[in-house]
Length: 255
Ligand code: PGA
Image (tube, rainbow, N blue to C red; front, side, top):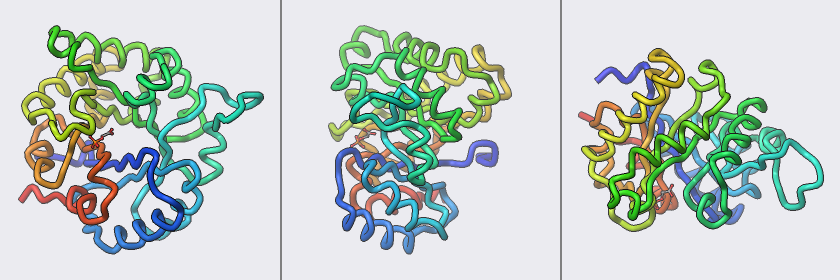
């Protein structure tokens, strides 16, 4: 398969885990295990660990980023962190619209759209999450939900800006449940997303955009997922917290 157009990317989402010491130990061990060939490795650390992690990866291909960003550029928003501040702390990318943010912090597609625009204008790569709940899948609404999330989330963004966006399809029912979606199921949704992205931004841009899958990805299920034509990478939660399992996923070997 020709992967040159869309080099595979494997992203760790550490969520609310790891102290500075644990971050340091992980990154030092992880960097020594990389084969540098299969995929690019990104790690989304806690805000508090950004600077430490960014300094540690300086001479390696690992990319450090954040898990959220404010939908405001600056000012009186107690507790919020802006895109500019993330850049300043060494972040190169940010995950936006994760289902945990949508569910627990009531993020809407409109808020997510504002966050994406601010992140892009600050020079952060953005990883934009979408995905249906179990009820929505059972009601046959997966495609409709994902289409709406992408359409509203990416509204008003230029095609050129879009080419650097990574879309992460994460069915909510597969996150943290040990029940990953099947490779065929994911391929079908990814192809659907690419078709919709092509309608919104043109074929050339849609062809360049990476669409990755997240939801109970483990070393023993990553290969068949990566064998699918429209799966350009993986977003890994639980299995990214251990050096061995995350490096096994990052170093996947399609043979
Ligand atoms: P999981 O989490 O790998 O633990 O299912 C994925 C995610 O929430 O990004």
